[in-house]
Length: 515
Figure 1 (cartoon, one colour):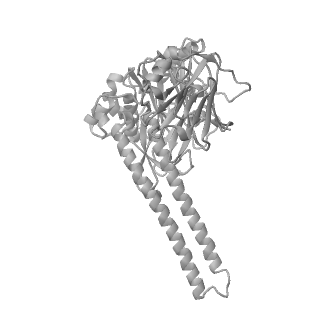
Figure 2 (figure 1 turned 180 degrees about the vertical axis):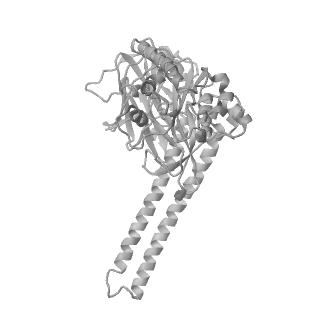
Figure 3 (figure 1 turned 90 degrees about the vertical axis):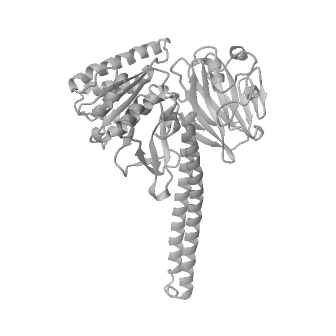
């Protein structure tokens, strides 16, 4: 059985699938059959206790059963969820194929959620796959159902759930400890679409690399066989064998290249279509979203992934927001990376337009001075340019996070009312040891105050046990030097990241940073 983390996926091989969940207290399972927009077609796509069946999906009390071949042909996915009468505790979601355990996903809600989409069973090519989600809804069933288009008349959401107790786990299972318990989805909605494109690109790239490697190994073997006998090494037969080996190699490589070009062309079209529909935080700078009213986004775009030896496809690289891991911009010069930092801040601001945004800016060398003016309405306080002022600002944020954690542990947590963005530039020079500790505390607790943390500076090349090294290990590093490889999580193939940069024109910078 596979133990999934948020955002991970795995292929399904059976036609008969069962979803169960275990938690404390009372809860009810349910399912939504949705299209590519993650919305139901009508109320009949909502399977629950009061509406126990849809084509290929049936409610069985303590389980939801799926027969994949019978799900309506135009459905994109089935969302499998849990709803509680009150705040949910840790939930262990499990999926069975033909009665055998196939996957398990542990979710530990942190913001008072009473409804959770645990798993997504979705079409991929000619088959089906499973993705671990963990999307929570503090508004319970009503919020979850409305978000996915269930608005038709019928029993009120609260009445539709005839809550029945789900047995707690009979044996210890994988737990999610803080800060992991506060990690939001790696993929969801717009972000999910971009990651699905990335996964397809990774699979296609892996097929190309594999075919090339196989062709090369086979060519080497056949050429070796052709010259292995000294008596026939220089004969016409050996020449013909070598020529045939080369022809077979070139034919296989050409076929693999053609398949990859076809896939890349299709993915390029998908990227262009998605770019026209994405909220600004996930879109390119020239996308229409940047000229319209800002829309909330579940992620931000960091840049484009590419590989020079695999053609011209450039895949947007996107991550969740609020950031589930701090971003660390690896650079020797904050000023040289100022447009990269500006792009990150602009997208973080645009991602959550329905909450007030406050930006804390630490800029000891003045490398970010061009960003300070357009950001002035959003700044939480004066830009910190003296290292002696760092500790007080970080202590203020750390104290707020500590109070939020106390409220969370006492069961009185409330969702953050604002989005905080902390840019700690020129790190670690000029920062005291206590400042590094507070940054570590904010990395762990910052989600409780809606904090997104961006660190700018030089990271250790050899991670050790010191506070800076431990902090560096926990961040998502963004290299600013070309030639630094990043590896996709599905195939392990190398990609290069071309980070987005804020446009250089001052009027455009002001518009993007204050959208």
